[in-house]
Length: 489
Image 1 (cartoon, rainbow, N blue to C red):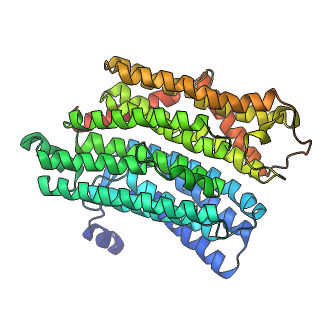
Image 2: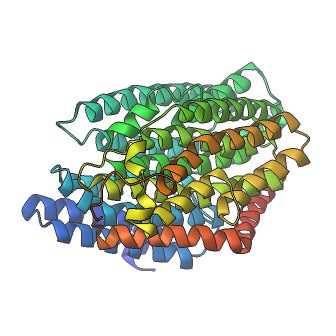
Image 3: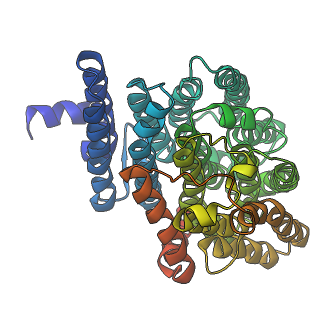
């Protein structure tokens, strides 16, 4: 054993290879910081960030699974590696569309790139957490950098207002989660998920444990922007630069769903009678409120913000049924939401750069005649979010619906179906404006290579997964089964 390996083993890192993706992201962030500080070379910053993300994604596909490091605080398993890969992938697409957008708004800052990398690093820590403290550190690293990113339009009042509101909202969630963790530690004497689970199994649920779990649900509900804890989330989404909104509403939120599932299943597997009802109520409220308020929006970016709240409800509904099928549906929907959610927001990002485009519904008039391909992309994203076959969104909602029916949670399944029908009112409204109205302008659209590639990739993937969802379903089944086997549920 080399001296370096002895030192590493001595501080409790039996296999530092498991940290390679995180180390690459961290090194890339510091390189980008140095480039911005010394040269401000915009292309170099984008290129280095994109290459760093590609390099970080490779180990997530080849790494050995099942390793635990940092004294059991950090776990690398199939679940965490899968989510890390897709978190890195979604961040890559945000990065390659970011520079043209910022330059068109005359608000380019190199800080965007290394802040995004630090936020990504936080989400990666979250999904690998095997301990409440590790989870908390990752959550706050991601949250604090996102607060800054949301307010980077320094001269825009809406951006500053939205960032401040998001800070207050996120800070409240942090405080509540802290209290929940404190109560759970006081009851169990440990932060480790496995030890917490064993303590509850042998000691039973008492007031302290129930209160701690309830506070965690509330705090995580805040982080997931579920109703009634959504408050100012749409303001933050609308005020932030649209590629950053995509990162906030999709990448960060998917990481939150992953960590919610891990915490609930691994730390509180036999307390599901407490948390399944809590998540069911939050899911129902999010579906109802998100969809009905989205109906009233004329600004499509704000409409998608409320739509993301409704999608949080669809995904969280799976937690009402603690079964293999439900967890499979949650994982599947979380992963495929990356493609349709990012696609919708990046579509708006690309068009915002065009002359006189404000994301108002009237801007979409006759879009199919001005640019048939762009209109087709948006049609695919809208149909997928609505859940119309042959898009992948149909299978996402179908999986959750069948899981709820299989667990006899009919009332929540009915809400899911009814709210999906309600959502047609605003998704199809966009489609109608694109295809059944005359254009308000004949100006051509000028998209960057990154924007064109991203939109084409997302739309194609949404269709391919809708026609052949088997691979993603099998991955989701495997991850859900491994989580359940790990705790003996």
